[in-house]
Picture (tube, rainbow, N blue to C red):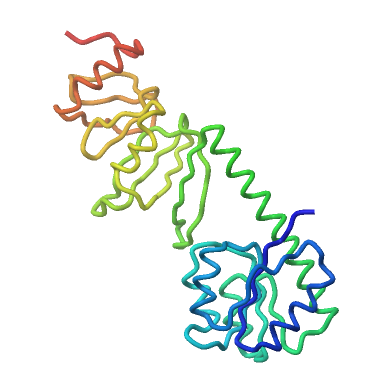
Length: 257
């Protein structure tokens, strides 16, 4: 059984002892550290990167919420506090569970069952991410129409072209074969670093194009793509030779006179 590396953060020594006693029933759980304030807890969690943490809310230096907001890793979280009024605010941090002190054995068991399920799901998602990356999928982190942050994996061959959002060069529009478009916070230079070795070429200061989607170079300064909904893409003089060479190599079009 996989060892669950665990950290306890609570300014009350008795509370830390109580959690440790509850965890004796779980031989696969290894408490690797305890901290008595939010600031040292923050540093310890970011350095040790545990799988599971038990967090008090009212603590010196940083409270539990402030500490979680500054983490650089994403452990499974169980809140342990003596104040039930924090429950609603606490769920904004997506905890596995919220336990009230003094801890009750049966309620603690429920929390641990939930934690193990979340850890299994987390491990599965991480494996899936690695597999997709190994296969060559591209991860796009975008915002949907409601402003919610989301992630999607796309096959590079399904991307037709990429361009900056109008009036905001820090966001790119990824236009796909199925006519979908993902708005991603990234510069064109960063996108080219990811796509340059996957059959894409920059043809203009505002466009990166999938070479395999090009039908022809029209009058040396416009690309006509194979997708019926795609616009004609301008080709800057600085990129013209590169585009011609790529198309000739792939025999994508007859060289214009």
